Length: 271
View (cartoon, rainbow, N blue to C red):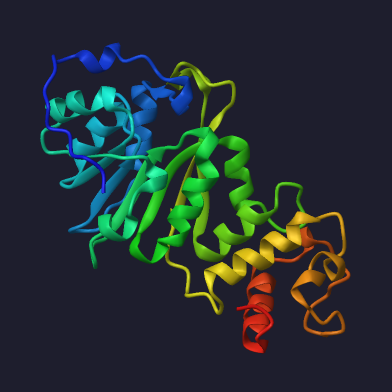
């Protein structure tokens, strides 16, 4: 687990922190947007909010005011001491979110809601990590690039439908809440952002996560080809009447990928 920073610096230093391009930082400053985001956060009684990347704490402050238990994960050492001083009831973890031990962080039986403005360059990795630990989470209210958000909810047959769409829709209920313009951030990003809510109340999969990832990734690696060709490396039986392998990957809905993966596991075709 990361380091808990308890050192002190001058009040107000957070406002003087300049965003680091290397960390993909765009600090949220629009108070109207901040309140709108927190209004979308629902935390069950006895639950906890885990914020990813609080930065200068603009969203953090409102979360701390509204919810009893808030934990923030932050990689930038520059802001740690000031966040601790400004929000003494905030549990701070200094860590790269991609290296966080979620199993250790998420206490058994505790309802957890994740909130955060995700760095654009690692959005997909964070999403896959949250999906992997979905059984320990209630929901996630997260900001990301609008085009990535669209992929989460895209239906089969659309250009945006792909690996992220299939896995997200099988493992959660994704919902687009609203868009956030570049002017709400410092510095303004070159793209529009969207707030997305993932609710982790889907039934357990009929197959393992690992096998599902393998099947879906194999299918979409050659999305221009028919599934009979793209899935051939998995040893499928093209004559199986339960599956139409003459279609391309984007024509299958998520449930078909789950069913195929379960069959391949049952047949011992994939482990």
